[in-house]
Image (cartoon, rainbow, N blue to C red):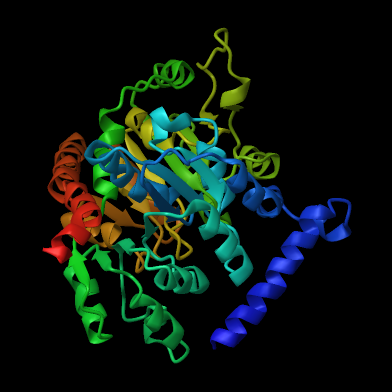
Length: 432
């Protein structure tokens, strides 16, 4: 299986490298914007990493997150690490969404000294990357199991950690082809799991180096909630909504758009904010054409814009959704018709009732929210509409959920400091 993994990965890497040098090719032109960003990023990332300067005598901690959502897990860990120790932080992403959101924000806002694409996991890239970065420790987020990176980290005796792991009986480790991934788990010095069930499943696999630490996403949500934020466009729009605003966040599938567009079109008397997960022209245009009543893009708004007859404001930039939720009354979070439901914790910190699609098995938070009565799973436009109508006209139920949602986030938070201390000082404890 390892041989097949490397053969397929090398073929994929060669194709990506060729495309990055041949923008005039038919295949490159057929790619969507997000994929082209990924291709171009892979074509330059190793050189950019070589050009960056982190050689200042301080320890370098390398974090890797798949996408922007996983950065929400890494962020409180990074910020706490900076409190505990003076250091360099290098953050890599696989997806372009994280790069696009963080690339211009600087270390003061992100806690990160340098952001880059993760060079693809072929052996040549892995050695070149680690030769340059020479990380003191490596921290992977949630479900990142890049086999050649893990092998090389182990060979170089670089302590490696997995943060916010969520293991299920359906995980790849329990598949017939999962041996190479089971072996990869042995590399991690500590696996910080979201819950005790994940720890038990790891123990069934013979992995005893795990610690139940919860999910740092709750800490990140609290940081976002306590961070001052002002968006004058949204505030002027919300001021025209006498009964509050419904926010549809991270809308990124056909199902998400069908449900939210039906809700908006059925309720012309209410105001809505839509935040698409992808903000390229194609995706934003689809959102605009799905709506019957007047809508406007955030980028089109000026100080003179009259919002009185505009039903929907469409946010056509990325990076602020976690803070924008503070302007809402109810929310629907997208991605729940795929295995990649986006963060339902981010709106909960403001006390918003949250609705989401049915595919929630890969995340603990939505299941817990349903159990606590602060989250609702919907499978159709009719169900979403019913939930919306009930809460918009039920102040008692709305207030109960608001209080319980905030309490739920607070009760689940406070885990980050323990994760950071374990990572930073584990070597010292072992020596003693």
